Amino acid sequence: MAKKKLPNLRCPTCRKIVLRSDPEFPFCSDRCRVVDLGKWASGGYVISTPINNVGEDFQGDYDLSSPRKKGPNGGSGKPN
Image (cartoon, rainbow, N blue to C red; front, side):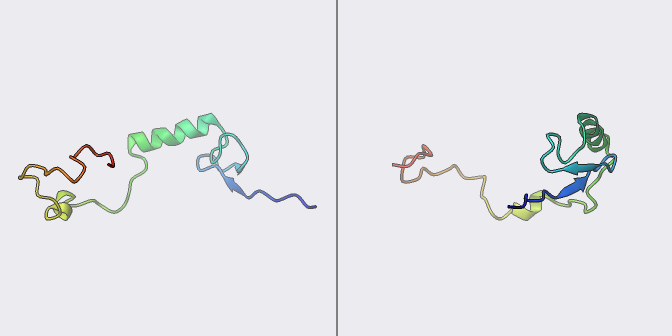
C-alpha cells in the first residue's frame, strides 16, 4: 500500500518548505514563529478593512436599561 502523501507548505516567515507533520507547523522553527508574532505585535500586519461603529450594529438587539428577568429555571443558567 502506498504511503499517504502529506501536503507541504512554506513557512510564512522564511519561505522554507514545512511538512504538516513537523512540530512547529506552519512555521519551520520557533524562531520564525516568534518573528511572526513580533510582526503582529508591532503592527507589521494589519487587517485592511476598517472596523467602524462597532457598537451601533448591536444597538437595537439588547435593552440594557431594564433589569434582567429570571428565566424558567430561576436564572441560574443551569437546566432544571
